[in-house]
Amino acid sequence: MCRDRTTRLAPGLSFAAFGVVLLAGCSLLGRGPAIEEHIDLIAVMPIEREEPASAVPATGPPRLQAGAERVVTAEIYSVLASSSIWRFVPDITVTQALAKLDVKGPLQVRAQALGKAVSADGVLYGTVSRYRERVGTEFGATEPASVAFTLSLLSVSNGKVLWTRTFDETQQSLSSNLLNWWQFWEGGPRWFTAEQFTHLGVERLLNNLAGQLGLD
Image (cartoon, rainbow, N blue to C red; front, side):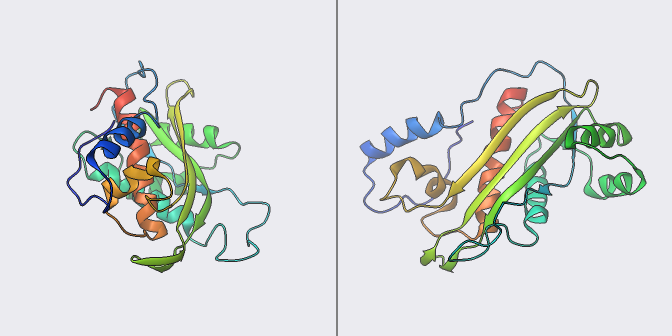
């Protein structure tokens, strides 16, 4: 779903060029087929870490910094709470349910068990594999924020994965890649922190999910 935003455009971007990248950017996530199954109430399973083979790159900050999974989880709740289209189980209810569950195995199995425990129709779950903080300030960064995570929606009734999308981005300047127009359109002409970049990524993915669920 490509929404209109009111923000500043980066200097030097002509309206003609912006129109081209706007059309290109709107198709980058591709909405995909409608999800026919009725999903009304969603639970959010805490995001889990997907440890890389090498957690520390040769230079710069760690690839997957401590607490990344908590940041992604918090941003999911933030985006869900910012719109009236979503009905979701409160995080405290999820925490209490998980404390009582003794389910092991793949993420899908545990997600379905959580969904049943809180009487949800669907469960959002996923992993974060990269969370690298910006080095510098919002006006000048020597290393940009870089984030990669995957979200999936599972049907509690049958255990089927209905939707999966990945956000895998390293911020670039608009002048170096016009297809990154959406970052500046949604967040302004600045260098984001990893948390801010995560929020934009979660919002982008959940907008896509809303479209496939027919909520937009």
